[in-house]
Length: 313
Image (tube, rainbow, N blue to C red):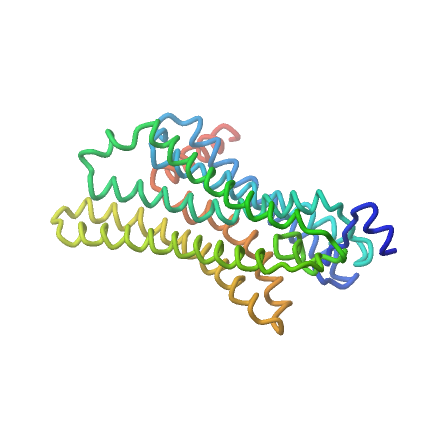
């Protein structure tokens, strides 16, 4: 079995630990969650793309978030559902498929942070420099910010995965519900200290950079709001910033919990469940928290819903 596995580059993925009796209920739950995530995020993208009154820098930057959520859900959920219906000993995946899944999973994770950073920058300009907002947040600037967020994520992940695929393999079991960088380099019997160090530095750098940047941005926004006597400005700042902060906290707490539990092997099952929740909870909640809490989007959804209801009557 081992020789055949190595020769054909076939790996065995642990997947979700479910009993045969609960496999179908779990599959249905995951399927409904995936459908909801896809429909809600695609709806927001289509709505912003087609409605001219939503063609603003803030909404265009926000489109990066549902795009990333679609990527994060699609790269893990279909495979996870597929494995749920299979026996534990039959959850095979090729090495290249595993590398591809790990690559896009990490792009999703890093892009989450950088997309929220550029959205925070947009709110900072809108509230702290309202008179210069239109001259700063041009279409060109929106493209530059979006490209920088995705580009930086792709570069970091490419380097990290590149360090992993250079290693030889002496094992074939992925001790995780899905493929990620740590699971891949643990297949090797070589010295993986470089991979460990880079992984830790990469994780700390991404978490710290996003949290510190967003913290400083909100401190400056709070300072401006405190010194301002404009109640309308303060009210708008609280609504838009609280929504953005809620989305960031959901993502940060899920990610930080997953990283924290990695340090405690005795909580391996909890860490694996948390890693799956990271790809389920933020993509599912983001459209509700951000989309429905944004006044323009909420009003447009309500208007379209009532129009459809009237037509059906």
